[in-house]
Structures are given as C-alpha cells and as structure tokens.
Length: 443
Image: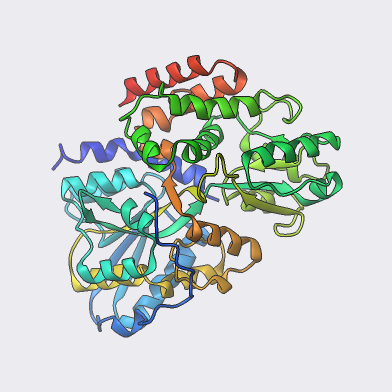
C-alpha cells in the first residue's frame, strides 16, 4: 500500500495550488434547461440511518465549511445519521494518503483534483458509484461531468461544487463612457478592447507576475480553437506542445499580448489581485480583466465597486465559431466504502436538494442542472452558474491535470514559459519548443 500511495503524495502540491488559485479559487449533448427539481426528490428515497455515523472530509474551512456543514446537517435531519466533518486544509493528497495508509480514510472526501481521484481509483482506495447513486447523478448532471468522474469505464465521483474560469470582467462605467459593446466572438472582443482604449483607458489589464492567470488564458483559447479532444490529448501529453494546434492558440494570444494599444503596461510585474484593482479601483486604469468567477470576491474585498452594478462579466468569447465552452475547476465527492450510509450521502450530494442549500447561502456554484437557479443570491451568481450548466463543452483546468512539476510550480514549466511568452509574444515556435521541453522533463 505504501508503494501505491507514493503517487498520491506526489499530487499534494498540485492540489494545494488548486485551492490557492480557485479559492476565494468531454463534450456534452445534454443541454436540458435546469428545472429546479427532479420528478422524484432524493429526500423521499433516503433510508432511515438512525444510529449510523459517517465521516466526511474536504479542503473547505471558514465560511465554506460552515455552508457545507449546513448541507450535512440537512442530511442528518432527513436520515437520522451522524456526520462528522474534517477540513483537510490545502494538503489534501498528503492528508488523505496518510489516512488511507493508516486504514482510517473518511467515508467520503470532496477533493479538488481529478488526477487525485483517478490515482485513488487505480489504487483501489475508492469505490465506484453504486447503480442507485449513478442514477441520481445521471438525472442531474450533463454527460461532461459524468465523464470527468469516470476512470476506466467506471464512474467514481459526483461533482458537487464547481468554479467557472471562463468569465471576462469589465468596468461598466468605463464601457458605457467608451460606447463599448459586449462581445460574443474573439474578433468582437478585440474590437471592444480597441474601443475602450480609444476612449483613453487601456482596454485590458493582465496580471502575469506568477504565471497561472496566463495558463488560464491559454487553456480557454486552446479549448475553443483545438476542441475538447485535443485538449484532453495535450493534458495527457499524447500530442506535443509543438503541435500546430498549440501554436495556433499561442499565435492568437501573441497578437493580443503584443498589442500595446490594448494592454495596460506592466503586466509582467502585476499580480492578479492588482489587475482586478486596476479595473475596479476608484480611478480605473483599464476597462477589462479576465479570470474566473472568484474575481467577484476580489472585487468585493479590494475595491468599492459593486458586483452586478459597477462590475459585470461576459462569457469568454467564441473563437472560429466554437461551441459554448467553460474551463473550470471544482470539488468531486468520492467514496471509500460501500455502506448504505455512504451511498445515501453520495446520492444526496448528487441531488439538487443538497446543492440548493449552499446556493442560497452564497459563495457557491453548482454544476447540477436541476439546482434551483432562483436561489442564487444575486443576478451575477445566477448568470455564472447558468453559463456553467449550459456549456456544451466543459474541461477541467489543464494545468491541474498535468504533473505539478509542469503545471503547478512557480518559476518553472507551464507557468514560467507563459510568462516568457507574455514578455516576448512574437516567437511562437520558441515558446512551443520550450513548453514541450518542460513537459518532457515533467511527465
């Protein structure tokens, strides 16, 4: 068992990164409009579990822990079970690995890393969803989320919480003063940035000092230009980073990042939080900033702008007629045993009823198609969630699917090479070759 868990421990740094970037950081044909309820509610099918105990672990603490514990409290009320929650902190893989090795894993863990889920499945540490749980998941999730929880044809997880990293945020006053239109395509996006810049305010602020925001730029562009299948191949290093599809995406980004008319100067030294302040501070220095739905928290914490009023977002633009697509992150629930109580809680987590509890409390986006959209506490949160469940294509953050030495370490690999490319966006071939060399060393 110790040998099997070595790969689990190796993923710890990557899992910690996901939490840092996403905290406050398969295509689907199922595009059914969310209804807010399923025909048969989960409550009516949950068993009486009086006297039974469960343990649940996740990386949430603070307000997130309180909200999740409210979800668990409702499960206790419905079943009579006792559920004890433990926060794993940022070192999810290491902590879980230690618990598994000691023979005392939790009943269920909600983890932010699909790579860790796959490793645990291959190690035999977690169990596939039962037929009953899978039926609930199938009724409530688009196929893309089922696929993301699948390992070797078995479904192992339920994606309970999600993050939408395909949002572009803009200063409403700056756009209104410039007469800028909300873009739908990449060409429209460039025109909008030019319109803002022509008004006297740079169109776009980019935070590039560390590198992960730049990888998010690439991942969104690549998903739209190369498509989901090549995205998967690149994540698994089944195609090289010198592939023409990579060069096409780099070229598109290079044309943007190399246009001094559109960008606020100093991006290579600017932090991501500073890029948000540059757009939404008291004296806006730029009109637009790209990053995930967690930008809303940065706006609230760092500025006096009000999300939904002074600060709004639009979807990352379509490129070459690409389908509605979302690149994001999330937490997947996995089970370590097949007990009745564990299966019941997994079913509950797959239901809209559980999602609705946290939705109403705020700070949460659910990928559950049947969650009640009206419960989101504001219009912006609702729009972000709607974009997520309506996406015809969803893919997990590519850098988080790769070895941490390549996709999750400051100063090297994907992060470092994208900073270099941002600083010199004209040499696409050199950037692709450097990315491939870093990938070869890490995989």
